[in-house]
Amino acid sequence: MPRDFLKGAQDEYDVVVIGSGLGGMTAANILGRAGHRVLLLEQHYKLGGLATWFRRPGGHIFDISLHGFPYGMVKSCRRYWSKDIADRIVQLKNIRFENPMFSVRTTFNREDFTRLLTSDFGVDPAAVNDFFDTARGMNFYDDQTTTTRQLFDRFFPGREDVIRLLMEPITYANGSTLEDPAITYGIVFSNFMSKGVFIYEGGTDDLVSRMEKELKQNNVDIRIRCPVEKINVSGRRVQSVVVNGRTIRTRAVVSNANLRSTILDMVGSENLDSSFLDEAQAVRLNNSSTQVYMALKPGETVDPDSGDLLFTSTAPLFRTEALLSRDITSRTFSFYYPRTRPEGKQRHAIVSSTNANWSDWADLNEEEYAASKQDLIETTLDALDRYVPNIREKVDWVEAATPRTFNHYTQHQLGASFGTKFEGLGVSRALPQQVTGMYHAGSVGIIMSGWLGAMNYGVIVSNEVDQFLADGP
Ligand SMILES: Cc1cc2nc3c(=O)[nH]c(=O)nc-3n(C[C@H](O)[C@H](O)[C@H](O)COP(=O)(O)OP(=O)(O)OC[C@H]3O[C@@H](n4cnc5c(N)ncnc54)[C@H](O)[C@@H]3O)c2cc1C
Image (tube, rainbow, N blue to C red; front, top):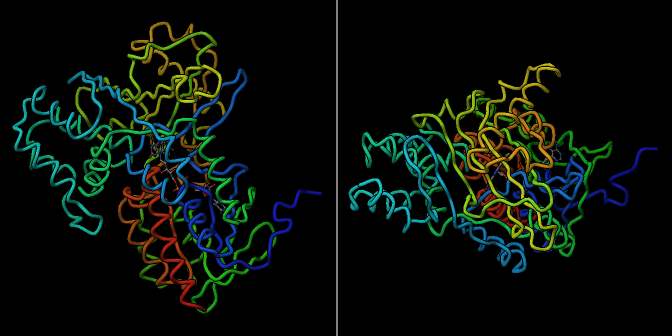
């Protein structure tokens, strides 16, 4: 008889959270802490969503999306999780760029970027200052017509090298492009520039296990292997969710699943205004990624001077199409030294990430897919050899992930790494006006994606749900 992953679950909760990504878990934690009866349903066998990890023989462990987030995570983790979690957030101080236009190292904060831009790139200090102030003053309800390209042209006309320095890491951090609204750049860039790039010491596995403990302390009922099929709506009001053959009643639902799947598959068009449905259908997904995970043999090391994050490119100019192309020219290497997991085995790992298009991988047959993955591995090892000599001899374990991998594990349509393009934000925010009690909190609109964006979106939405529940039936 198949195992019942809902054994002992109640027939009714105040709120059901669908998905245990950082947005979903944070919303569940806040609502549980506020005393609501919360059920957290995750389709995968692990919590964390894209904030995840995997183990391989030989004691190797790989993080999928622990490459860097802004300092704001410290405050969010302290307030909405625990001091214990916040205290484990540490700065990555050695960020490197290597491309045909420049070779620089930085601590990736405003002070150091100002130094680089004025001394190394020879930009007028007043323009740099003005640019930083403009980016920092941006809010998500601001003007959406100016593109990031226009923002750069205003402050640094004709400076392709400056644009590359400013844009490359943010494209990596949230998938935004020069054609997206400038606010999708300005908000995220300023978040990083406040203090630099940070990661969680102990690894994603440690973080998620501490979060799980916290959720349980706040009486959140957590269920894995529970894919929600349907959200039942009657009279434009949430009634229940259908999961693993059971119907569980609830007053509110927070979906952390992909926005399009939430609206078009789980809620269903019959419960929505046609104009809203049109808007939801027009929401574009963000791009996906490929990664190559490399673990070094026991005793092999990487020179710490190699950097923490290394942005490499062989393309002469920064171009969005080149970043996404199957013919890879840009790779970002994350170096995980033993200090990343001080309590684990003293191992070094390197993860190479590249933005990618779903369409380049979706239709390959199994043979072509295996060959493409192998090609990705080989070309990545070749590219890395320049920075870590003899990497092939040092490596103990190598494997690749593609847009298909991300789709498989998180159900994100097209394997989207960063949710939706900007228009997804308005649609996500408007959902409760379509269906009473129906909320979405997950990567959308570029701004609300990434570890900090997703987590903070969970905070915003949980406060709204708390208010909704307090207002009574
Ligand atoms: C390769 C890669 C590298 C990244 N690197 C970084 C980085 O360095 N820094 C950074 O800040 N961000 C990074 N990101 C982005 C970041 O990981 C995500 O934006 C963030 O983790 C998303 O959180 P989320 O709350 O939107 O939920 P997700 O992580 O998208 O989780 C959604 C959850 O919902 C579950 N779910 C879906 N459908 C259902 C259903 N029907 N029923 C039940 N459960 C369901 C899924 O299984 C999943 O667990 C990276 C992403 C990728 C792919």
